[in-house]
Image (cartoon, rainbow, N blue to C red; front, side):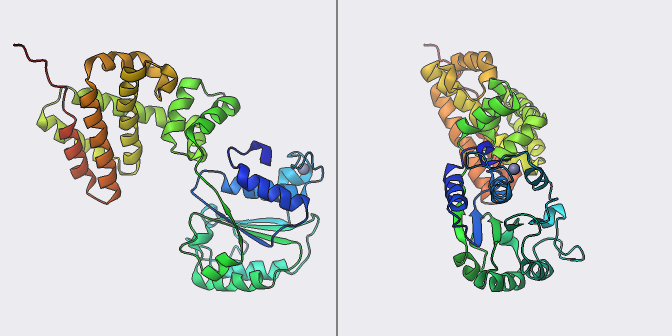
Length: 344
Ligand SMILES: [Zn+2]
């Protein structure tokens, strides 16, 4: 994973490349932003660039002995601390949910020695916003008197839970969600995903490339869509009791609810878009064009808009911790069939 392989993180890449080129490398960076957008991959690419044996056009070669060992965690000068993956500096540490004091103590013992074989020692601390306060305070001592040729990269979702004194001693690099078209393009170009499927997965990933890539290799996203569309289809003819049953059934999928509701949202949106534009390049469910065109003939725009509002409100209610089953019952009762044309 060299810089040229990253998707849509031009700001971070520019900043880090110019630091490496001008030898103005900061002793600590804080990569802040949502998960799944390339924070870790950028940290690895930076560690590679700092130590690569054959830098080409301002980027790591990606293939020398140094470049290949770094992502595998096998380079002695590039150390990754990721509690969730069991990557620890002090393997005897028993703190299993966050970076604890033992990890930082081990780091402080190590940083005083110069790099073994590379040019820079790089420490990548994953989920640094979950670092315990005692560990944060200990890390601060390193940041206050940084040893030469050491770069510490903290990866965090938000700076809010972190010690302000730690944050202020790092160069902040912000990472943003990746726009759906950039994810779609990457899925097609790099993972050979067919365009129709790529469009849908990119939309559902909500800006998190990492999520999209996981879905490419599994059928989960497509199966989720099958289930949701089947359910929406069933609701077209369901009575009130069936709707309550459907809500109970869907509420069981606690972790996937926002995704399932997004799928419903994209679906009604597509039907509406088709009614207004008949432009297939605008469809998210590009591979379902025929069904969408058929529904566009059957369901009036007013009904579609009301359904979209209802789904948005259900999503918001669940985010605010309304009981999922309750929110879904309300939603499904609102997803009523289009009014029948009245004869005079
Ligand atoms: Zn290299």
